[in-house]
Length: 337
Picture 1 (tube, rainbow, N blue to C red):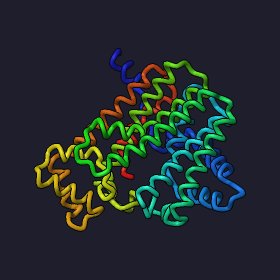
Picture 2 (picture 1 turned 90 degrees about the vertical axis):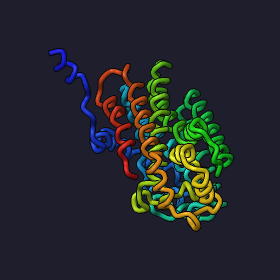
Picture 3 (picture 1 turned 60 degrees about the vertical axis):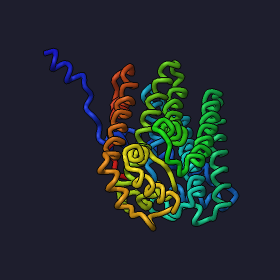
């Protein structure tokens, strides 16, 4: 009987569709708010905002705000507005990233910089950041403003750190996770903390959701880095092996470099310095990653982070929204794009 009770106490994982259905109507409101907030008297801003909106994206960050606030029974326009604000911040980082990386595509479409040029793109990204702060200011919540200011500083530091780390073959796992926290996980964490702040929850609960977001964000980026080896351009919306072309030393590469021969290490570095696979084929690097188990080691680390994220939710009362948050790490690990 005790065993049966234990089985009953274990929540059934939700499907991706079931999780989206929980917040689908609110996500539609986020889309409308994003559109409204990116409409400007400057035509280029409106045009770029509309292009960003229709170019797709998982809207994962607004979903995190919505699920976190609903976890505490908080409903209303502030969560919608903050969901839009975080999507703007995310969009701004992508626009700036594409300028820095000289990317030509994003999600299978021409990137903003390839359509509007670098100068316009940088200014549009800056405008999106400022508009997100303007939205947050409407909430008259100093904790949320403090959170956004700290978030922006950390993310800019991440951009600078990434530039410093390019083509460095001696990076450690700790270096990788410091960069990944600043580039990706801190934004996940802020979205979840915002849900707790809107609901005026105790600091302990806010901290646990923040930790959940960090582990979730680290796992998300790690899977992204694995997919850069194993996916296809059709699924990713950009060429595979892109990180290697751009000289980004991701965790699978760090693991490879720790195990490979000196000659193999030089061949990996050759790709970095060539900025492509002119002299060393991508298939050769992929074979090396598989032979040394670098991709499986990275995936194993992602699974560990997913479990860490779930542990952060244990203290919260059972609800469909807790089930949704418990299910998200597994979706992230299993995704193919």
